[in-house]
Image (cartoon, rainbow, N blue to C red; front, top):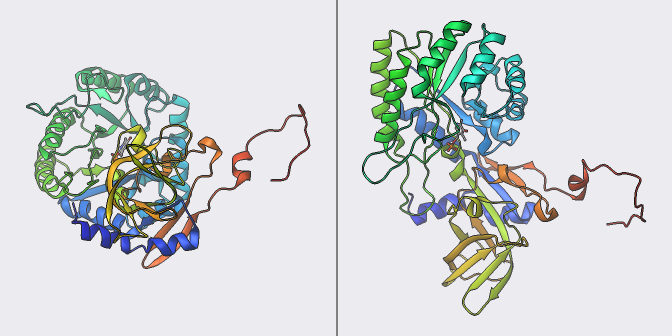
Amino acid sequence: MDSPSLLEAQLARINPLELVEKYDCPLYVYDSAIMKRQYKRITDAFKVKNLKINYACKALTNQTILKFFNHIGSGLDTVSIQELKMGLKAGFDPKDIIYTPNCVSIEEIEMAVAFGVKINIDNISILEQFGHLHPEVPVCIRINPHIFAGGSSKISVGHIDSKFGISIHQIPHVQRVVEATGIKVEGLHMHTGSDILDAGVFLQGAEILFNVANSFKDLEYIDFGSGFKVPYKENDISTDIEELGEKLSERFNDFCKAYGRDLTLMFEPGKFLVSEAGYFLVNVNVVKQTTSTVFAGVDSGLNHLIRPMFYNSYHHIVNVTNPKGKPRIYTIVGYICETDTFGINRKIAEIRESDILAFYNAGAYCFSMASNYNSRYRPAEVFIHEGKDYLIRKREVLDDLLRNQVEVPLFNTMEVKV
Ligand SMILES: *Cc1c(COP(=O)(O)O)cnc(C)c1O
């Protein structure tokens, strides 16, 4: 992890107080330089002939972010037909989009086929139906490698009872479906979902995929998914992408030689590309001292940033208005009418009412998981690019909450102007 001063410098680059002055609070801010740095780290780490990074856009789906990744050469990983359409709208070539859904209907998959994107299938029932309907459309198959790291760490990369992927034990069945339907398998895929810390665990999964790959003769690519972990606090452990790149590239190149063809090595990171690029800026509404705790209550809550409550995630929080203030211990909470705690017992420079706090790692799974709970507006989003700031999503207004509500001629009352 960067040293605290580096972290501060990173935040200073975006001038948080000026942005709040200009766009108000609460505000999401994304720094394109960090996204580019992370993209480049991956492309530099892997030394293979053909490498394709597909940004997993469920992490952050704003059109400007998608266009930025298209601009720097990334493809797109999508998990729903709507994400796929967002990608096409942002200008991605369908060939650069992979559609990796889970438990969707064959009808939705057929819609994706019509757009000409890469199709990733993760269960045998759909593979069979798909093979009968579209024997001419090549597919990728999502494999669940079921491996566990050794010793006591037990880092799972594909539980035996996971709903994702086709078990490696079912490969013979897959082959029967392939033979019966004449479908072409152009890709193999694994995505474990968990935070991978150990290159060794990843390589174990890779070995299993290489092994399976030998049973499929028409492969064009192998997609190793994601699961790269980023640092969330000082001295936090994270995936050593450089080490992984070195080891996996070597193994991949050997595999290609034995396979007789240069395949494309693919990854689909979300968090790794955008997490550290994002900040969430909030205003302190109230500082509340109880018998045991000092609470700082902010103008946001689980409606805007649910990761701490949903996943127990850690987001580093700093006071940007009073950074030199004497550090004290605070519990940072939201304004939603249920418990929405962002951080417990955090050492933060003295917080006064109306101070601005910044949350780090707010690029991935933050805005994209925001809701209108408590009828609150979702925040505005700002994109920082080459020294300039751009509003890329307006703050919502009352009409946004009412937009799809249908008025029925019942219980009519006088409308009150609000
Ligand atoms: C969510 C997802 C990703 C991205 O995972 P990160 O942990 O954000 O990198 C990649 N591939 C698939 C299929 C996913 O569902």
